[in-house]
Image (cartoon, rainbow, N blue to C red; front, side):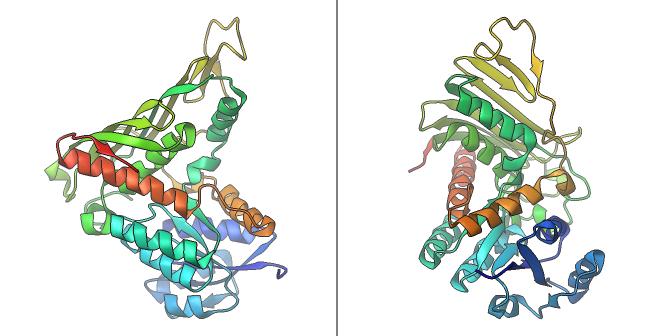
Length: 338
């Protein structure tokens, strides 16, 4: 293994800056190059961090560079699968922004390409590394909540600087849907707590005045392979601050955001116990633990083990999102997942 992994970034938008910070800070990676839709945006990122690295003429040039071991794919949703497939076929390890893809054909092709190439990957469901999420996962693993039987996760983000009608995110053919573009975080978190989803039933709401060409609120009831049930929603039209809701009910306790009730840990409890840590309470990417995500990928490369979530797991989350969307389009008809 070389002394450091060479990392490169494909597309220099908002989230790319967080990937760049993480690579720069990790002692086992070196940011060796970037590319973007315009050279100006690539130059801006390079200047921001005072980097001495390559600015590739295009993505093919990035993938052809033998100095590149890892590629961060931070392009718009509709490019995720094709860009990740190209990276896999070039033998590069991948940090892929969510969602993995926006239709079933993309997901099939991506899954096959990554499996055939044998590269490592991390799916950028960055909230997995949030301090509160890690605490809740630890409590579940310790049995503090008993067996989880109900989970509720919600991604609520209002129209603003990032999510608005004049950007690609408002176009169905570029973004996918409210569930794919933001709600996938909620789907991933529900799966993180309760495992694979086996059946969904979805409903959606459209506000034509917002200028989006897909429904901007979607809610689903879900069943898990474990027997647990849940509720997942994505709303891009909330008139209130950003909110990411997490509720897990188990046979021995309940976690409601950063509030805990547990007969196992505190049998004489008579009020909620607060868990003092950083929670996923901001939609600003700078608030999210990208450092921990990239560190996880690098650790897995050094130890020759799979990341979690990797692209294969991210594909499962996208399939749940698509099933919810199909159910909503069919008026709530039940959709089963294999």
